[in-house]
Amino acid sequence: MTLSLALACLWFIAANMIAIFPSRDRHWKAAYGLIAVGVPLLGFVIFENGPWVGLIILMAGASILRWPLIYLLRRLRGLAGRGRQ
Image (tube, rainbow, N blue to C red; front, side, top):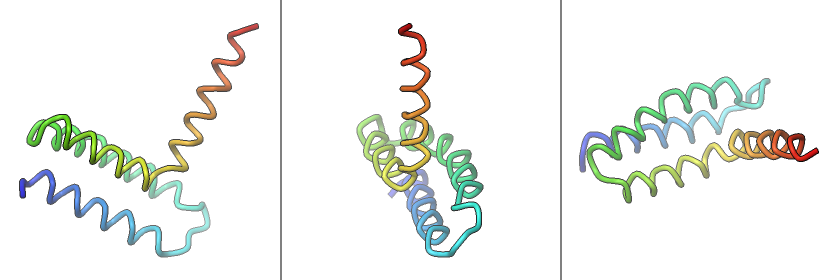
């Protein structure tokens, strides 16, 4: 196992441990931190293991951080809907 995959596994464990504990802000601060760490980590995974493994890690990370992704897609759809007038 490469270093990047080992770090990605630690990222997934940390994300799941964060999700176990209750939070007043519904984990948004932790989600921002996970995104800030996860994006460069994804680049490192792609660099060391190739794009297919990177795509698998991206899909796994998106499944963990699905609510920030859903809100981003809703916002982008809203912005695109305003431009059609």
